[in-house]
Length: 377
Image (cartoon, rainbow, N blue to C red; front, side):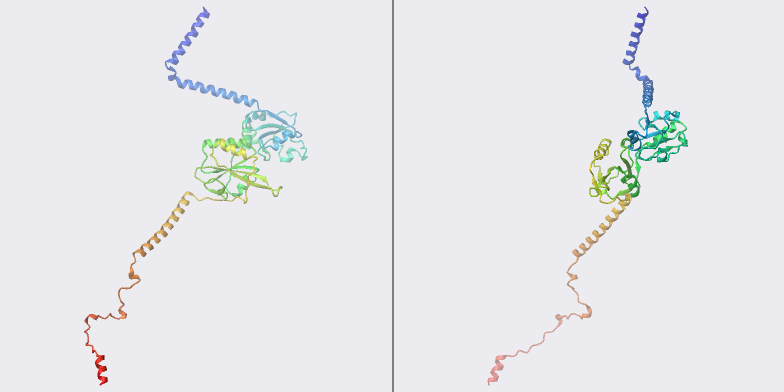
């Protein structure tokens, strides 16, 4: 009986569920359903994150291990490293902070008092790390010098992880003038410069951040092209407000002087989006680019208002010249012969005689035949 009643209960529950779905009663309780789903997803996501954190590996590094030493100090990878002897117990703040860096940085332990084979110096002496600060922890990334983490950020695992991420996280570097462009971009082995024309949209910022974090061997910088203008603008797509542009710079060996490196560049000429820009960078990492003949100068770009005023002034100047030219043509067309042939005499030159009132005088007519006959007689 118990089994039968149990089977009947299951059938009843099945019928109720069908009626619930068929009659659309779930629509009246949709907010409860979505709330339960949201909580379930949140709990499931937390479990996954914790599982990933638990898999964070802490590398044991020896100064004689060239592979790991190269990864830590020469690869540009992000690392958080604890200075500790092999038999020492790892501090709790370090072990609890390590799982928080999954996907952000690698974690390792090294005896910083050991002398490195090539330099003969310890890591403490080579990089100026202070062992009086305990625990002695430093970060290193992007081919930069190690940065020590001080006591203020060693009080909790959360503070330590946050500081380690902030010191190893890649970010776009802003360039304001030619000197900063040289130091922050052109002096690097590879550099991608974004010529920003207005603010980046949110989705653009996201894929740019992903690219910056992934491409550790490349420096990323940006300049406000609405304010600044580069001397290589002729190499780039024409400037337009709201249209961002990209230039890839790379140092190459001078073919004439092989010991000297030269700066080369290539402009991006496609839509400003994640996939094509990333492909552009990947394609030019090992490509041979065109060298720059001159150093790049940064000048001030005229504002829209200034440009409009200048164009208006030029238009006014041109319209004035055209107006004067048209007036001269009209004056010449309206001119008559009076300018060339005067129709009245000047009073100083005397009055013109009126011949209508002059009386005719009697003229004496000599008969030449009669005069000749009288001479013969």
